[in-house]
Length: 310
Image (cartoon, rainbow, N blue to C red; front, side, top):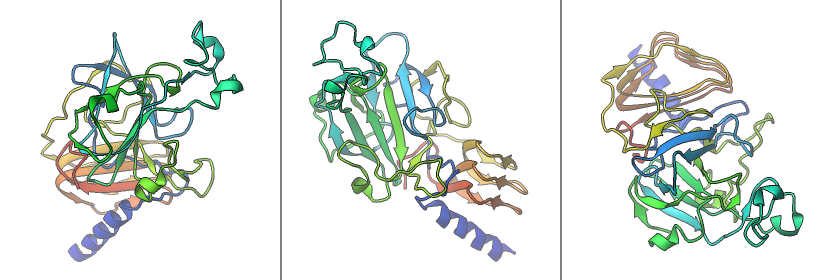
């Protein structure tokens, strides 16, 4: 019986490391990331992984109560791509530009200039295989700090400022967590994931993962309307043990971490649901553990709130 459970556990961990997922799944990030704003900044969520207008599994964040706001690395990692020499802001309509000239602001309804609109962004690679993306920096706010491609920086290091360059309604941070299929070759010249797929089809690759944060509730999954979270370093401690014995239904996602995680009897992830477990010591699947077709599951052994870990 022990051997059989071990075989099942190993099979699940191997499957969880895959970066492709059938339609309907909701991949959750492997580890929890710090809120990517400088410590002390009050932050809210404008769009979440279900409501983001351009594609799913991304999130829009914004500083609250003033500004300008500094954007920081969400975890230790290497800077792989920097694009921060663009200066044009492209809101949804030209009316949002007010008196700003088209050399500075061009609404997406103005084809004479909107074709020249490009985002400023940074892509970082982390030791756990996940990448993070930070978008809409003002021009030169990243390179002006001396950052270069290939630099290894620690989580919490300031990357640049919150901005609105590119296709944006206003100042905010577009934040993504992804597991690119082919590393940097999965990112095109405009900074977008190649062949990330269409979630409405029956066959697609899902490289993006729903971000889980170390602040903002036990689950760490932020939804549109999350407000008043004060950015800070992730705590290094975790609960002694956890025993989730639940059924996750379609559309439900969660990230759980503890020192030891043992799933309760008949723990089940239904089609369209997703779960990521991160334990400091071990993850044990109890009797009756199931992941249904088109469900997503991952298990990771790493320090609590340490998304950069292997």
